[in-house]
Length: 321
Image 1 (cartoon, rainbow, N blue to C red):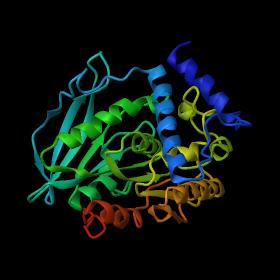
Image 2: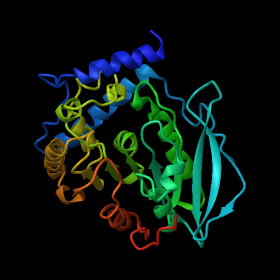
Image 3: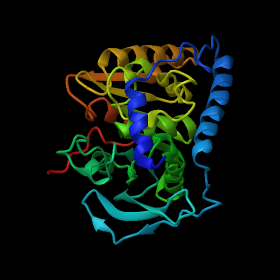
């Protein structure tokens, strides 16, 4: 079965998807010790599911080979167009935008992720549904890396390249590796969930336009690329976010989002907050809801991230379109 026929088949399966009667590895911990043990087992299982589809190549196995274009002065920061080697042996490189604040570092850093079939450029455009989130973090004193990734049969197989993005940020002399975070919208929100759940170097995450219960995702037509084989059966998709605990986590859930109905995102948030409470970190997770469609908000997100990482995105001026 070629890629297109596989996607058609998966889309049909997604629309007819069913919530399993019983999950293989649901979150049922009653103590912090049990919760941490669940995290270790669940994270290992998720990584195994991704590895089955696409073997990981670490930076040691396949060098990052980061190539930068000429610097462009953007006022508060310097912009570099980059390319880096992906986790593959075909030589495929991916485009990325890197911003470096003016002044003396080290600085906090944010990995900013685009959505379905997108690219990095709209994340810098205040007129887009991303409302220039990468631009805002860049002007707010953060080193920003915004990669451009292709659509894949399974969204989770981008995970290995997301690890490489964190490697790139951590390797920069301008970055304080103890102050790195991630934010993304739509599929970028899904990728945010995956990389924050699996890479504890990221100290804060903003999942926008993604968090939902499995029932909620199946309740409306959604691209089946989220249905990594073995994933739906493992746990409710909202519970994956508990692998981020006790690190700070914010959900952006628009009330008119047609992809993730608000009643299901509220149910998912209640479950995640209850799970965070088991870790003794109930106040570290929050949900921002507002009357809009499938888009980035930022009103709560910028001060939320600033508080954790020490930037000033909440107070920074948005560039004029």
